[in-house]
Amino acid sequence: MSVIFITGANRGIGLSLTQLYLRAGHTVYATYRNEGSSRSLLALKTKHSNLSCIELDVTDYALIQEIGSSIDSIDLLINNAGYYGPKGYNLGNHRC
Ligand SMILES: NC(=O)c1ccc[n+]([C@@H]2O[C@H](COP(=O)([O-])OP(=O)(O)OC[C@H]3O[C@@H](n4cnc5c(N)ncnc54)[C@H](OP(=O)(O)O)[C@@H]3O)[C@@H](O)[C@H]2O)c1
Image (tube, rainbow, N blue to C red):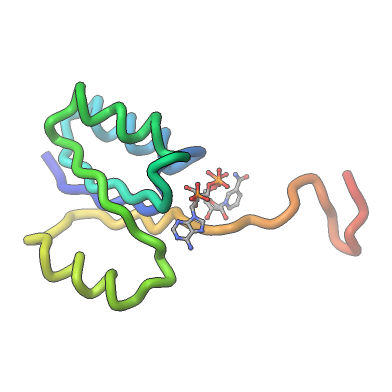
């Protein structure tokens, strides 16, 4: 079994990947920014002892260092946190 670290895991693709890896029995470190918008992720902790949830804004570089030194080792980092921008737009800002 592997140790997976997933950023932006409270919703969207990050949450789905977290659920998939937990179901497969892997150890998952899942990060979120706000407790209020992370209820689905935090609720998974009641069912999965292989889940650790960590509060992290990926622009907080000092905290990233701190977390890095508090975790033994990971097999896979999925740095999923990010902002895609408005959806449904093409080049030149024409809505498709
Ligand atoms: N879905 C697509 O079609 C698509 C296509 C290309 C690339 N992507 C990329 O794939 C990733 C996930 O996509 P998605 O559709 O699941 O996006 P999403 O639903 O908008 O979720 C984005 C996630 O990133 C987190 N996040 C954003 N800025 C952050 C920061 N500074 N620190 C920590 N967390 C941060 C959000 O946290 P909060 O809930 O706190 O905001 C949320 O958990 C994104 O990086 C996106 O750019 C997506």
